[in-house]
Image 1 (cartoon, helix red, strand yellow):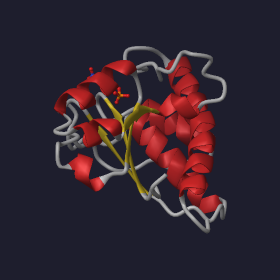
Image 2 (cartoon, protein in one colour; image 1 turned 90 degrees about the horizontal axis):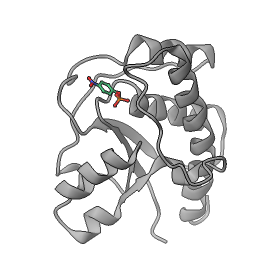
Image 3 (cartoon, protein in one colour; image 1 turned 135 degrees about the vertical axis):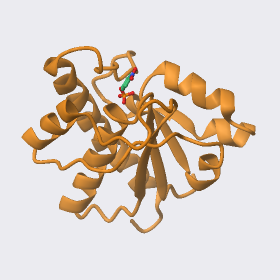
Image 4 (cartoon, rainbow, N blue to C red; image 1 turned 30 degrees about the vertical axis):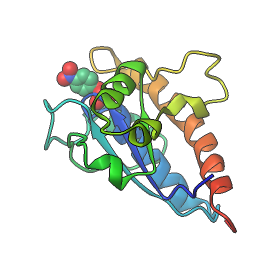
Length: 163
Ligand code: 4NP
């Protein structure tokens, strides 16, 4: 397995789910010395929120867990397939949108679902879109992302020789 050193999390708007995943992953890598070296970013398949900060509800939920969220939304581009080793979609619709614009089979092969790394997913691999719901949806998103990131870090660690 080639070493994974750059990961991009992708949702629809890049203001709720994928910036949460980016923030949780960065936080974890900062507080634990797992010997894993990876750059993380996030992006959206849509362009409606480009330039916007993360949704206040997502920031509040992250803050409750001691995780700071920042950054501004951007749209995933075809060039990003060259920049990342792993592109992690939040749900099946994001996955399909990414595979549709992938220029090569190799690029399409970089796209997976984040919850493939969630030990409690039990076959449901979507992180549901919380945008039109209440605070509870954001809490569920955080927990799914948090569990998945644990599995993801272990997977990346095993891809890095000597890590
Ligand atoms: P996200 O959530 O994909 O997790 O950032 C959404 C944000 C905005 C919209 C949909 C989902 N929207 O329709 O504007």
